[in-house]
Image: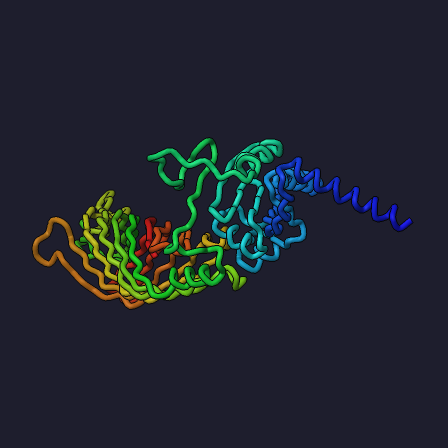
Length: 419
């Protein structure tokens, strides 16, 4: 029995040696150590039906497998997005910058995002080398877009070298999809929560604000005295009437603003700011003050009298000194973008200059109104990492009649303010 066992072992060894010799005369080398598996994470919520979303995610994961990527279905991308400020209205954003931060947070080699867009479905594929995007209409087109953006099946062969003179990838549209170049070393990485917070802090702070506007101006002087001589008795009749004036003009604003902006991770979407500065308005006004009485007589008696109004052109200049506050109400549409409405009010005591057109002597007058105030509303867009941006501003400057020698003046303007 022992001899038979030794004979069987010898036959096995001889067979193995013969096989090695047949394959090249050398024993097979040991298998190389396995490399770390690259993973893929898919975030797809483009449909109202979660079953359809799950089907699309499963198909995308299958496409990732054919390219050597291992699906990581346990990665909590939504939690990572919430922590890094990449959430908007309960959904992960479809912006390449914040998505790269989510990819790093979950430790994935590739992050695929499929989201509903105004033009259909937006497909974003974020890798270590950058990001690519494509707009499609249907789920089948979204799957095809993922396959296209991921590239061909993964092989061990080195990629073919680009032809000489081929420019490096840059932002633009190529082969039907959007290309986004990888970030340079000196560019901020808004996927990093610390870099995003620093960008919002730098965007706020003390800023110079300036603007220009067109305006319509109204003037009212109640109880303007005037006189008329009775044609029958010769007596002087004194009366009172209201003077009205209307006109158009332009204005400029210049101020210093302290703008403490929140960051998305703080959870706050509103803010308050203060500003101090000056405004200068110039308006041409058509004014109708009462001039005298006109009389109607019959049989030697005055039957009626009516005010007669003059027509005068004035040039008004108003120089308010302003101290005000602004309150922003809105939301972060993206971690790098705040949109909303900014309401402002400012105490605006003003110097007033008036010039009666056509007169040389005594035509210019000046006065001071300490009761002025301004109300404003801005339609605002503020981006992290940007400089001063133009905002649409609607404003109203009111100068009440705090003294008898002053008119009521009010101007409603629309224009732009930069901050």
